[in-house]
Structures are given as structure tokens and as C-alpha cells.
Image (cartoon, rainbow, N blue to C red; front, top):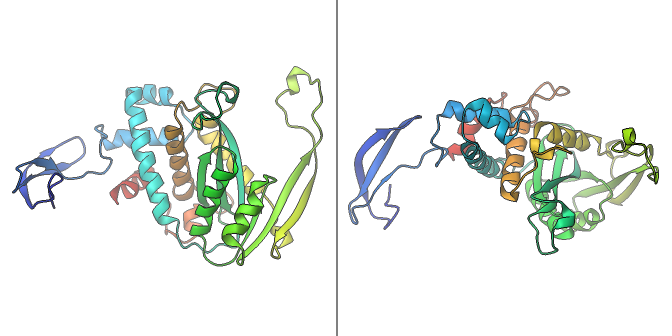
Length: 318
């Protein structure tokens, strides 16, 4: 191990024990600086059992302050765990979701609010107000291949689609909703190995006056319009219902997406970490009722269902 300060050679210089493990210390032979070895979950000082309990509560849709009360931790400690584990999950997802071969993908985006409502923002404020989480889901295995959070515009759509294209090998069929930025950006990155269709669900025009009991109900569904944009997609695979069902899971198991509540994110960074945490637990830890296994097992990325403790260890060890 080299010195963190001058990159010189080091020697062992004692060790100490914290709440989780024995930590080796080192001393530089050139500058005399002492430092500790890097640890999993660097910066988290609470016991690993408590960390796992906090993450488990987060993945079941419990908010920050409720988690703090249930675990007898300060809310700042809870947020520190979210940031640290969420960053580790984000890096882990980026490393593992590579060179995938899939038959069909469904792409959709779901709304959330960060900080303040959109009507109170200014045009240059890109980190508050309405934020959309883009998801790419495999139709058969229900694996979330890619995700990205930002404004619903061409720039963020381009970033998301470029990431999806970099993770998929070979030819793939993609179905999207009616967001106008999808066809151009997807063809730009994947034309030549792409079968693309748009599945647009149609609803009745909203009434001008609606009684209070039905104010938050969706408009009556009247049909679906399927449009082929590239290649020769299979008609039986032109569907966005599976990714829309995952949108429901996001809202159910992530407090920051609950409508008409107080759990929305105050910072976009924490919002993204919470999404990364959800994606990793969805892929590796939660058994899908239709598959009978986790999406990662269905994609042959692992041979067993991971526990939260195993996910934290593997995500933070690299």
C-alpha cells in the first residue's frame, strides 16, 4: 500500500477496532503520515447490523424520519447511510449491468418532485421541481437495465438512451410510451440492431368539472395506438405494461415518490441515491412473484437471492 499523501512506501503502524471490524493503520516511510486502510462503507460509523436495518426499512417504503425513530438513530445518520450505500449501489449497478443480451426492453419514465413544486422554480434551476426517473426494463426477466433521473427533456433522454445502448449486446426490441424524444434518440444510438415501437395509451379528455371523490382518478381508458418506428418488432411484445407495473413498485417502496405526502426529496443527489438503492434491491434481493426468483437470477447474473447484508457487502467491497 502506498501513502495517500506522497505515494511513498509504507509500513504497518498498529491497528484499532471499531464497531464493525479490526482496522489496520499504516505509516509512510517518506513523509511520516499515518492513515488507516480503506473500509467498506467509508464514513459510516454505526454498526453494520444497524446499517442493514436502515436499508431494509428504506427498501420497504419507510421515510427518513420514521426510519430514524424505528432504529433509534439521528436523521443525519440515516441520511449518511442512504448516501453511502446509495453511491455504492450506483457504482455496483454500473459495473454489473454490462454486456447484457435481452430479447425485449420496455422504457418509461415516472414523475416526482424535488425540493419545491415546479411552478416555484426558475428555468435555470435544473435540480428542483419536477424530476423524471427513466427506467429500462427487460420484458421477460423484469430486470432494470438502466435508470436515469433528471428533467423530462431531450438532453436527459439522450443521456439515458446512450447508457441503455452501452449495456445491451446484439439486436433488441424496444417499446416506449409516447414521449416524442424517444424515437430519434434510440435510433441515433441503436439503429441497425433495433426493432422499435411506440405504445401510446389513449384516455378520454378530462372533464372541466369533476366531483371531489374522483378528482385524483385517471380518465377512462379508451384504447391503445401501436406505431412501428424502426425494424420489424413482434406485435405481441409491443407493450409497456410491465415497466408501468415497476413504476407502481417504485411509488410503493420508495417514500420519495408517494403523491400527496411529505416524503419528497429535498436534494436531487439524495433522490438519485434512493433510486439506486431501490434498483439494486429490486434486481438482486426481491423475488418476483411471476418469475419465482429475483430478476438477477432470471438473467443468470447470480445463482441465489441476495440478502440486504450481502448486497451491502458486495456493493461496497469493490
